[in-house]
Length: 324
Ligand code: HEC
Image (cartoon, rainbow, N blue to C red):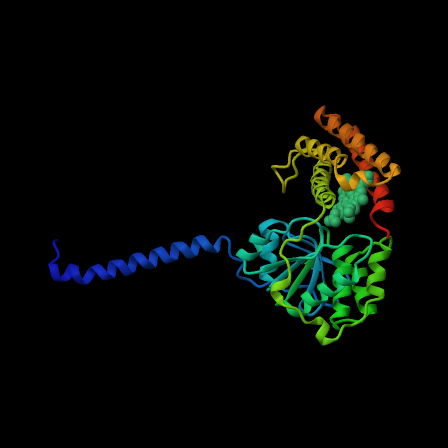
């Protein structure tokens, strides 16, 4: 059947409309892959007495309404969970570089205000409280594991912003699992005092999404990340874990050994005393032996060395990182 010129002229816009509809549907389907899950997720209640794990998030604890603390969002999954919780601002307080673009794709802003383990300076406590008071909420504050630094940073910020008393904030830190040995972190919250409205005011544009950290902090952040991967491999009997099939232990142990060796030429690391250099040398030798054991498939020895390495992280941190 042939259509009269009049009929086909009438049908053409219809065809175009149908095509546009199909195209739109296809685009929506494509974008729904990176969109947050349709179902909103409730953050844990402020009265919870235990931290919770959520998809791609560890150790999640709510400190006050719309103020949540936890571990680093793991990849897309963690960011999607935050978006589904309605989080608008993510504040990172550790030395690792945040995934600013990943967060922005899901409509969230990243702010990076790193702190160390030995305490929080007054200036940083003010900035953290100002971020809480002036940036859109709900806010999610994190460090790597969400236990020590983000708990103290958020604990101090909620007190300075007048949302909780120090006693209430200290109780939330206990739920996050902050270790007693980080005296400077506890002290910051114990001694925190509410600021006035004027002191809390800040230009929302003034907060950095990436802060520059020293070479040593950057290397330690990477060591932490790789150490975590090696731990996962060790737990899985030095095989790729089921939920991490591309984790290849020999690649990560080699990387760990290299990272420690690199510290020896870091200017800040070189300034530290001979006792520290001895501990660093010991860590280098341990990671090299660990790598050799993994490469040669001597897995019992590898597990022993891995445990020993964990102790040398603690041993050096006790003296050179965790106390003022
Ligand atoms: C020889 C000493 C030494 C050893 C061994 C060591 N560290 Fe560190 N680490 C430090 C020091 C010092 C700092 C603080 C650097 C600073 O704040 O300038 C630090 C900082 C860190 C940080 C904080 C980074 C940040 O976000 O601010 C992490 C995480 C870390 N180390 C993980 C590890 C892990 C995991 C191991 C063991 C596999 C380890 N370190 C072994 C000395 C050491």
